Image 1 (tube, helix red, strand yellow):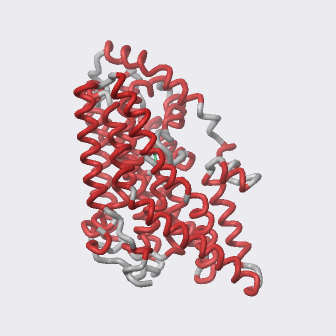
Image 2: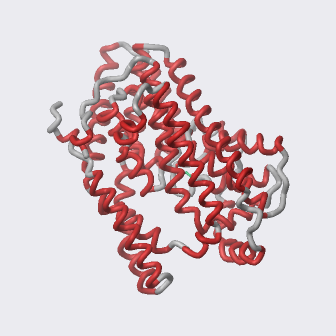
Image 3: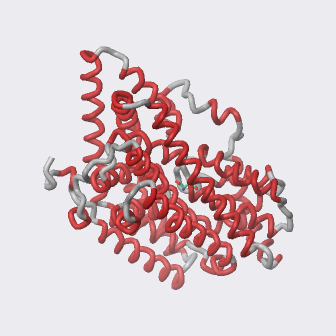
Length: 436
Ligand code: ASP
């Protein structure tokens, strides 16, 4: 494959970044000038949101074939060179370590800054009234988190899992399919593997095309979010928002930076520059699943992580590895406990960390995916679950930030697994200018 072939069709990163800025600025401007007006709402509902959704759906569209083909092939290829169990264990080791560090950073910050202490009672009542209905709707979506959540990882029907977007169950089937594939005679194995390889290549090409439209999609999505945003609420909850955002930044630059340097053996600045398109996509879509196609493509072509690893670690990570979400959950539970005057002893705080790590596995990689589980964590430690109403108004902004960290955590894990297994390749498109 030459660098000029369509596989390496550049991702217009600069344009995407510009679109993010323009969409954000225009949205904030529109909010200030005509926030809540019928014209603005009409424009969002009928123009910007539908266009943004079309782009988002195009990304989602390739997720099922991408997960199935790359995961099954990943298992086949890994099984041929090394023990699958070892790679799986290592992958989950990185996932759990990163998620727990993130939740720990969040708890440390929220205990130190205590953003929930001085929140005026009138504000709490007002916000609770305003967002009560939405909070109830979110909580109702939680159909029991417990043993059954883990039983459901094994699909009764893989087609149903694919159709309902139950990616964890789909991944399980793909892994088993890959194991089965590795055990049949080569005469039968080869044509199936060739088809899967072809499907993976096709999806990679589609992603290349969809990313050409990213500047439009990103501008529309970010405009829709920013123009609807309650800026006054943002001011009132500024300290809480700063604790979450600050924690995410510390985890990103410090914790992940150190892991990239020591385990991934890469200069963190180069690493973040290389994966910039992934971060932009995660930030603007607020969805780990929608970002999966971009993270696979960029990790392979620009970082040099082989497909056997990206195809294995990244789909798993997009559904089960959520550093940002765990940090957000930890901070929010403690913040709301402070608001309601509930003292959480150290034992309960450890429970919060554990639950944040465990629930991250069950969180869907979609916008707001963690909110139903957050309500459950709150109630488990004795904080009123309807309290999520207080943070809903600023959640979208925080979702954009935590999703970015979720996805970076996946890519860091893929880099570390590939590096420690000695599987890194020379990137096909190493120089940033090739794809920037
Ligand atoms: N939006 C997040 C993601 O897709 C999940 C969440 O925390 O709500 O990774």
